[in-house]
Picture (cartoon, one colour):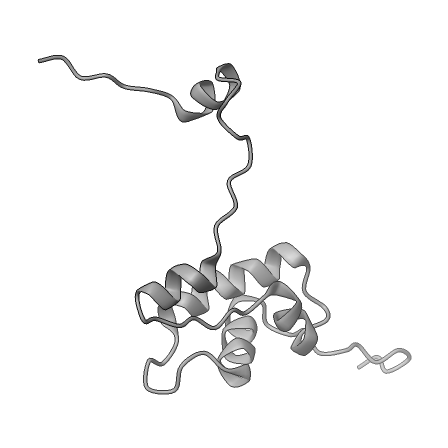
Length: 99
């Protein structure tokens, strides 16, 4: 028996009746599994660390996902802790104070 391997992108591009966008109701799928989720966004990270770029904030979220304290869950303190760990704040320089 031979196996058929398909590239999904090629299939979608070359098949006119396959929709290019498939919408999934995440809440409905979670409810079917009797599960919930809480979503954190890069904007949440930037709220506490406005000095970070969107890409840096994404790096923080990816780290928090796997390294957060499971007893506490993901919260503002965890976001702040991991943001500082990945991207330490630099103290402001004082102008005119040469030593």
